[in-house]
Amino acid sequence: MIPRFITLEGTEGTGKTTQLHRLAEVLRARGHRVTTTREPGGSTLGPDIRRWLLHSQDLEAATELFLLLADRRQHVAEVIAPALAAGHIVLCDRFTDSTIAYQHHGRGLPLAVIRDANALATAGLQPDRTLLLLGDVARCLSRAQQAKGGGDRLDREGLAFHHRVAQGFRDLARQFPDRIHTIDANGDLDTVTQHIHHALAIV
Image (cartoon, rainbow, N blue to C red; front, side, top):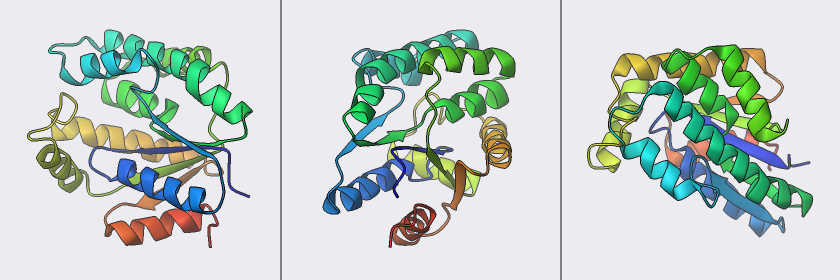
C-alpha cells in the first residue's frame, strides 16, 4: 500500500523536485488522487516567505527558522491536513527533516528547540515515508547553481555548510530507518526513479 504522506528530502541539486513530479505522474496514472506541494512556499504566505528566505541578505539564523516555521504551520493547516483528510496522497518537497538538517546541523541552532518548534508547527503530523536523495555534495551543488544562474542564498553557502547538512540528513536516516529511505542521487534520472519506485514497492 502506498503511504499517504510522502516527503522528499535532500541537499541542493539532488533532483528531488523532478523526482516528486515524476512520482506524482505515476501515482495519478494508477488512479490515486495526489496533492503535490513544497516547503517553503506551499501556504498562502509561502511565496513571500520563500522569496525572503532565498534572496534576503544577511538573514539571521533564528529569523530564518521562524520564517520556515510560520510557513509550515500555515501549510499544514491549509494544504497538507485537508488533502490527507480528503484521501489524497500528499507528496511534499521538504518538510521537518530539512529544518533539522539545515537549521541545526547547518546553522548550529539547538536541536531541542527545533524539535519542539517543529512539533508545534505540524501539530504532531509526521510523514509516513521519507525519500532522502543524497549524492556527491559538490557535484550536486554545482548543478543547482548552474540551473539557477548562480544559485540562491542557500546555494551560495560554502561547501562546508552543505557537507554539514548532508551529514545531518544521514544522521536522521540512521535514527529513523523505518521512515527514511536513502536514495542514491548520483545516477541518471531514470535510475533514481527506479530506486524510488523500489522504496515505495511500486512495480
